[in-house]
Image 1: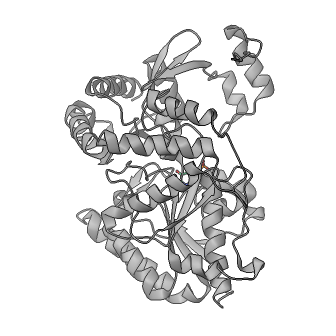
Image 2 (image 1 turned 45 degrees about the vertical axis):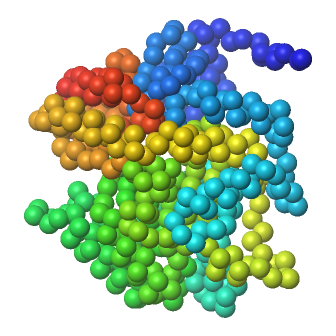
Length: 446
Ligand SMILES: *Cc1c(COP(=O)(O)O)cnc(C)c1O
């Protein structure tokens, strides 16, 4: 037996400065860490994260929406240990292996009808790149090479590589790179907060679908695909909308010969109450993109699922007709095995049913928070909750994050929107904790 040689330990008091001198952190203005220091973490267990001083934090955002069954989940750990002793990685061009085949077959069983083929990438943005390229390449292979444009919803977020940014409508992430991007058109978001007073979420969604139809009517000849985040636009601030929009979008895309790409990177894997959000509109997209929760939050992996008609358009003797996109770690066995262990937990623990009870419990005990005079637009879809806070602080998000940590809870507001996306193993006691501490934090910031 060879035992693991840990790298020379870093003294906890040095971790911060050494991180700031060597690591460029994501989604950050590095200078802000002078005022809001990094938190040096050592371990995780269940919904809890622990720092070098053994302070604990309840991970109410599932570590950027990826963790489904808690940190250091014993079942996922065991599966990974087993896989580590068997096969850590092999290239997927010219080779195959058990975890990738099993995962593809199981996803096909779970996914909306017809999505029989899995193409793997390594993160969410790479799945979006794959779906966009596959869609345009399909049209090229089928004699419509002019169908190269895409549309997305206003306030959409689909990742931050250049192709994904071209269908992302968040100015802060996009503007610095606008010269590098072939910006695509957007259509109105059915975000139910934007409905007129007295207008139902459903009527508003239908009105937005009419706008989509107008756009398709005019531009369908150039359009390859319409890309959406089904039911919840995450980075827009958990904007939620009525599932009728999915139904209309599917009908209209069929009518005008445009692909529908469902970006379920955040909302897939049970987050909206069904395994996939598309189920709630009773639709099957042409491309289904999954990542984030697919490995339970353990390892980077993404998958684009598509149906036979798309697959067949690439199947030929000519190499150039094939989908030649490649990633070094495509279908990595460890990541696939983590995903299989994650699917096992869904099946063995009847997770979706248990989540319905947890969601009902949270909605009930959250009443004092919902009734707080500075809290508005309380909303919930499955295991996602969000609300806006009326606060005089312009840096509300940063203050809320910092004050949350002082109160042992990891909240990461988007602007003035506070949201919860807890791991599914959260208990009722922990839900009490989330609500109680959030109420305390919010009360101090208004
Ligand atoms: C996070 C996210 C992405 C991008 O995934 P990464 O793994 O961060 O590249 C794309 N779409 C949606 C809806 C997301 O939430």
